[in-house]
Image (cartoon, rainbow, N blue to C red; front, side, top):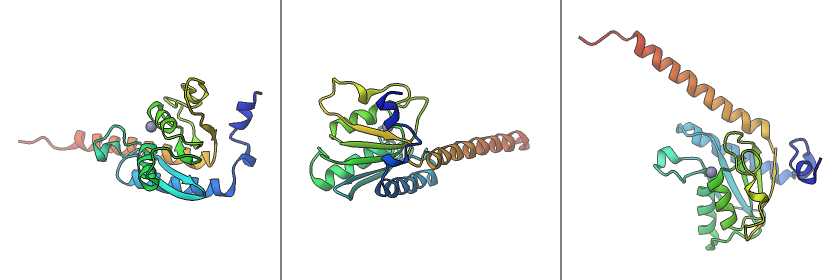
Length: 182
Ligand SMILES: [Zn+2]
């Protein structure tokens, strides 16, 4: 097993502090706010010197903004908060593995550390489909670690998609059984 795999093992509890768990739990709450308005539940929190400077949940549908991922919302808020687009020494907590766009944004913002909950096997750009942060062509290195509260993060997403499938099934049933207009 390589060092990278050890560092990113979901079982390595030692790599996460109580502070890490606290912020990821809050990111899960943010994700639930997105879920409540019909968005895929993903939450993100940015912490600098022990203080939260940005937070966000996924909201591309409701905000008509394809870039409105949880990470981007949190990055914008954090940069405004500290009046600097470089969030030096910051940690971002995200419930789900970031996509290509968000990984790029984390590098631009000079985020020091990325902690994410569960992997995004279809399009994750950190450990799943590509490993962008392992490339050495970026001018900034983001340390990353995954698996914090992975089960809760995964369950939140699975529950959302299961509920949405069930809703669609019911809607279809109602349409099929509705009497035809005369
Ligand atoms: Zn994203």
